[in-house]
Image (cartoon, rainbow, N blue to C red; front, top):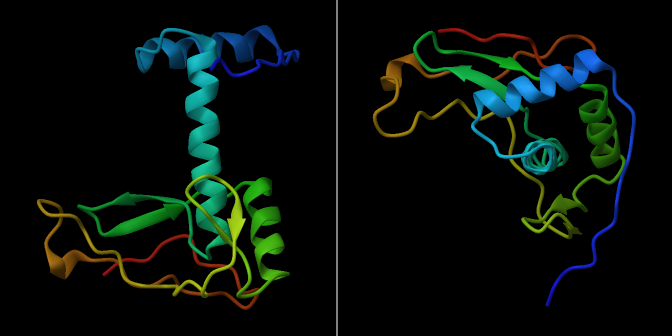
Amino acid sequence: MAENLVRIQFEMTRQKVRELDRLIRVTSMRSRRELFDNALTFFEWGVAAIVRGNLVATVDEHAGCYQPMLMPAFVAARRFAESRPGKLKWAAGGAPVLAKRASRNRPFQPRAGGAEPEKQLEPPAHTAGGSPGAKATD
């Protein structure tokens, strides 16, 4: 059965459209819709990770460090989750469900073929404000 489609329209600068089209070329996508579908999937994953108490970050396995992704939407998602401690977890389908508290601040464990175990990341360092540090190294 075909899903009912809803048309969503919004305005962007020409420069932003050029950036979107460049991303489409770089990623070999076929359309702007495909780009937005992928971007939304990635964003949903990021919000779900934040709600579970994790960081969204890039990991440099060779240097043994990471750089968190900082976005206002992630800050809002963290506040949302903290206002409901131990009650919500984002399910794979995108709906919140009751769950156990997620364990936090575990060292980075590389996948098979990744960096050697001695180059694993240290848990995030917390500042006085309670937010994780930008980098951790061995």
